[in-house]
Image (cartoon, rainbow, N blue to C red):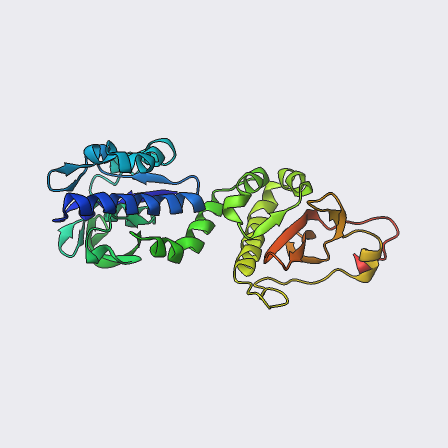
Length: 310
């Protein structure tokens, strides 16, 4: 996922101390986004090292200060970074002209965020950046004519802003998982409220490509239900159809799977995914407020199972 640096947030009268703290807070925002989506890339118009984050105070100086070393290590070694913006933006038609402004001033990073349907991130350097959404005015002239409009841009300059967009970021991250192996490898980031028994790895790695989008969607819904599960509630409020298995199939052992501790446990609850008859079997871990996935795959059948129980 791309996130775009709002260069306008460097246009302030901050003191060096204020800018120093703003940078540390900014890095925490990037860290939180990266924790949700490990494929995050920060895109800026110029190299971060060349940014003037307060009058006469450049990020190149900030990065060399002792209190900035851990933050800069994350920016340098973990977070992917690209510059300039044109390196990731699609090339516009030769006859197209556009201009984006925030509160009357040009805003390249915010323009790029709108074009790419991505979040923008800012230094918390002024009250106007203390919002989870920003409005930009834009004008567009091309062969279809002239358009003047306003756009809302996802935005973060504080941890609370990231939390507001977390579900969208997580869904975006999940959409980048295009194979069952991707779902398994990224499970801790995509589905933090779900647990997976070891056997599910093979289930996912063997998952047909046609089933991946549906499985991904159902796991996201289960994760959301577990996240909203409150102590004292017997079970989550389901956003999917969840049903227990029939006694016939339970007695045949078709819903028992090897749990995390190596014992065979009943995973009776299940939801379905496309193409039918795909099943996700799970059980509730009430004391942890988590959902534990025991099996993902075709509905398990054995000879002698009555048709009505299949």
